[in-house]
Image (cartoon, helix red, strand yellow):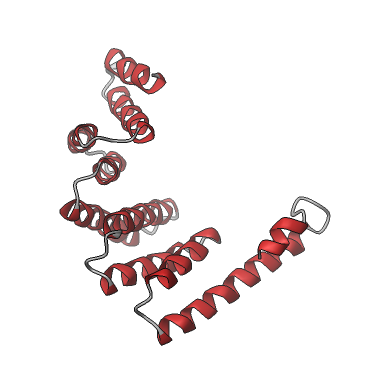
Length: 193
């Protein structure tokens, strides 16, 4: 896969063939990782690699399974907060995808799973990212008060500069929804800083 990425140009005349080969090889790697997981289900690196490859080619449902199994097999792993946050983000994306295609029941289910993953992450460690994920989920559900609460908690949880910018942007969006442009401007100015 790396050889193809290093030596071939997918924007060239053979771009379609190159992309198809990349997809085929990535799927082949996933089949191989599946076999390795059957033989050695206690290797966390296999779950990480499999989830990464699945995400890279848009197989989000498959990535969800790998991440769920990772957390299931290693409940005391130091990375579980990050894994659950990633799981929640992917589940929320799937919920949005299903809602856009009219599969409302499936969308609701994945939104419930996403919310539970973020809450599980918070139960392990209180981090800004988990609060931010919950806040953004509540925004998509139109629950602006709950969203604002989660986003305020995210600001209090020592976010990174990037997270803080996203949180302020989300808070500005909530204020715009509420027709409070002055308050939204205050949040947008914080994003700029």
